[in-house]
Amino acid sequence: MPTFSFTSKSVLETAAWAGKLADLLRPNDILALDGDLGAGKTAFVTGLAEKLNVKGQIASPTFTLLRDHEPANEGLALYHFDAYRLSGADEWYELGFDEYFEMGGITAVEWASLIKEALPARTIHISLERAGDNNRFITVTWADERQLQATVE
Image (cartoon, rainbow, N blue to C red; front, side):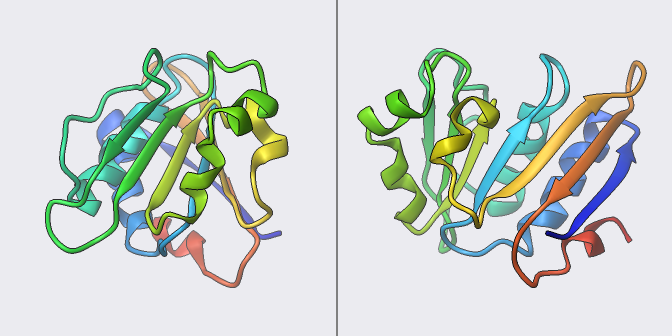
């Protein structure tokens, strides 16, 4: 599986990088986001949503579990999940959330490692780690032929 890593030096840089990644995404892509509290998962989704031009305010869906953002114009919807409060993949399936993987939009799951058994092999994995006050070390792993590393060149 291809992998690349880089360091983001600010929240704005993380969001801007997510916007570049959005240009390479396809319908039904799944983004599995992992990192500690404050690592930049929601900042990433904010940049992604801005580039996708979706409706609604971007905020972590910690208590609602899902924020469903329709495209403002033609484009892709964004299904923004937070798996932090789920007991695991079984609860994910019980709630029917796996159906969103095939609804034609982009699915972004924060705390995705908590439901890793439910994630298809095609999932794009993004790990965000604090590397100082503002820096984030970001690692991306994916399974297809796309050249996602071009987003940092």
